[in-house]
Amino acid sequence: MINQDDIIYFIVTDRFADGDKSNNKGVDKANPKRFHGGDFAGLIQKAPYLQKLGITAVWITPVYLNIGQFNHVDPYHYYWALDFDKVDPHLYTYKAEYAEGSKKYVKDLVDELAKFGIKLILDMVVNHAGYEAENHYNKYWFQHGTGEIEGQLAGLPDFDHDNPNVIDYFINNILDWIEETGIQAIRMDTAKHVESKFWNAFKAQIKGAYPNLTLLGEVLYEDKNMIPEIAKFQRYYDFDSLFDFPLRTAIKNTIIWDYPMTELARPQMHTDEEPGVLDMDNPYENGYSNANRLVTLLDNHDLDKRIMSHARQRHPNTEGLPWAYKVMKLALALQFAVRGIPQLYYGIELGLEGWRTEDSDADLRRDFPWQLLDNNFEPKNTGDGLPSYQGDLFLYTQSLIKLRKEHAALRYGMMITLWVDVHVYAFARYHRNNLVITIINNGYLDMDEALIVPLKKYGDQEKNNQLLPDRIMDMIDKYGLVEYKAQYLLLKRENDSLSFLVPGKTAHFYVLNQ
Image (cartoon, rainbow, N blue to C red; front, top):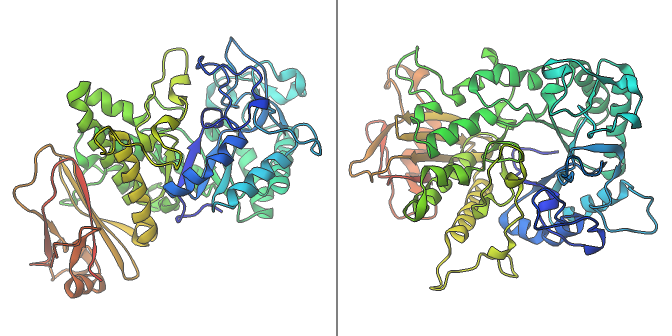
């Protein structure tokens, strides 16, 4: 099961680490459209790195036996399945005692990762087969219609999940993978393109038999106005979690492109304000049934460009480099402080870039930059002994994961907006006796004057409108607040507010001085 304690790391397996040269048939590492050799052996060899970073769950791209080349492109991403019952030989190290393509190779991967405290999320595809794979299946299993569900995605043969035989095949196929590998979670590809009948069968048969299996759905709408449509998969089809693409859009727009921070949350000054993306979590207003279980992200393999490339586009050239890394830190800080389960796309912690081009997504899936790390998986220093920009970002990401693990409020706490304006977003999260107040200042200038953050919106006379319960207010009065790790400046409540000094382009976390 994937839960709010987890930190997910998404890997395009072929581009992560090549641990076994014997399965490198057709590998051409100089060509971005060919196989690069990443495999299960490489993932196992690099598991200590993931453990050092603080990762608890790895989502890998599909493992199915794929078609050969199509239009001079290898299926290095493994989304062009030929046989949904076998593992592709590029991924595993041959064992004579296993049948060709045996699922036992994935079972071994699950067991090896578990030694490092890491769960495996298996990427599954039910919507389509690989190009020209129709002749491997009953011809009546496919449809050739139009639209988001019945049309072909990128020209791939589209399965008809109104056909009971198709539903039966994939339900039993998924059950086989669960039972033969021991996986605890599935990431379901292109969920919005699959007929609803399949999801009804999934929740009856698969979730019924394995209620602790986590189903994470890709419903790729980036606009916050599509949240009611995205939320249907959690509300109606029993998806445990969905990828929060609208929040990713809002973080990209605000932190990188300097949109007002009210894109994230409304100021709460009057009732007719435009809601921010986080205000739309409400299940009673067609929001998610449980937004706390959404997977938050800044990058993945299908978007227009990596978040670092957005940062470099916004802050170009040599003089823009320090600013690009500042906003990268700010975006990561916000992702780790808000509700949800954080997902990192491999290499984001080292500032890896990537762009989609007109004819290819390959640049979004560059090889992992192992050259930036030493043999102990520590970031290499610059010539003067200081960490590089990439190394500093790694250490910062590592510290955010540690912060989240140390503070239950960041895993389970409600989100309470305290203040939001064009440049600043301040919010509190609390759970039991744990409190974290996060201040994000996306302005360019340091704050010479204190930011006054209210703790009661309308004063003592209207208790139902106070932002924090009396118990939390009493704890602030008793212990005061200190900045996480620094702990040199004690903050106390004055006139139902707190005063913060937060420099521009930085995030600060304040915790109880217990």
